[in-house]
Amino acid sequence: MMVSDIAVGVTCNNCCIMCTNIMPPPTRWDASTEDIERMVRSFDKKERKIVLTGGEPSIRSDFLRILRFIKKERPDSRTMVLTNGRIFCYPEFTKKFISTGCDWVAIPLHAHKAELHDMITRAPGSFEQTVQGIRNLLDYQDEVDLDVRVVIHRLNYKHLPALAKFISNEFNGLHQVVLFPIDIIGNANINRKELLVKITEVKPYLERALNTLEKNDFDISLFHIPFCVLDRKYWKNVAGRTVEDRRITFEPCGECIMREKCPGIWRTYAFRVGTAEFKPIRPAPKTIYTKSPNLNVR
Image (cartoon, rainbow, N blue to C red; front, side, top):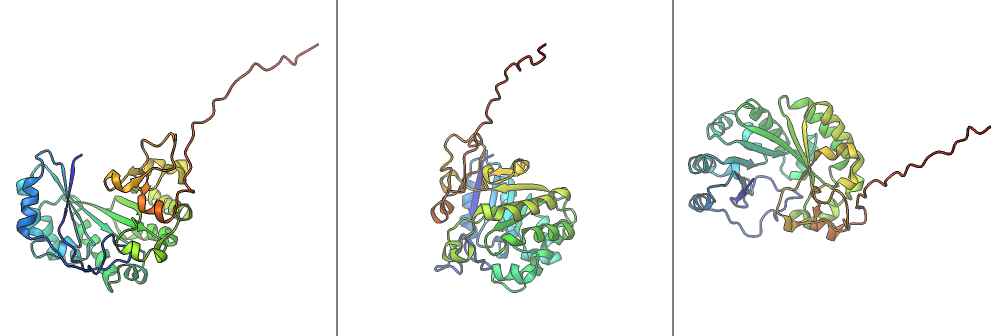
């Protein structure tokens, strides 16, 4: 599927410690409405997915206008918004948003409790607004797809099982959960000493979370987590990568039998953490059968 991202700017009402942008931004820029409309018009007619990213797209005064414009210009495209979800805590706004015909919303949830979530977003009150925003969108689950995303790092990886339980208990009607480790750029790079953790250290907590989500019938997608660090039963959840290939590396994969399907790891992870924990998956050795000697000797 062809995908085009529209980065609408850097303004945001969160200041996440692991954001891939530098936040607060050293220089502020936000695309004008006209710039965004020109971008949409320039897209290939075969475009099948258009993604609004930021910053935070939903706090723009022209947010709903932009979504309506995309639907008018590219009616056959699937429109997605990457958002912190806080704006959807307001029921009237959520209702207006649904009327734009946007197809898909993705919202990160960083922890199962306000104290930790708000420490990660560095925005007091963001947990309560995000949780309520997800609930309000679920009132329209027949009209818009929704997934909750979990960005994994040292501050939250031990809480993944608790977060999985929270999602299962609190979001009736939610079906899709996406999990992936941080890309160490922007704020994530500035704060890397607090955030870096090996994927193999994450593994037991991640797999406990996956068990909980699976028992509650969620569709689970894992991005940027290689097959070789997961038990085989979770391979079905490895979904690929969220970005273009140039930000991904496959070293030291060699002749791994899963290389073609593997999402690889972030290049920034390989640079900062290393790759020693990743081992090529080899084909199972062939079993050679020989005739057993006839021991029935008289």
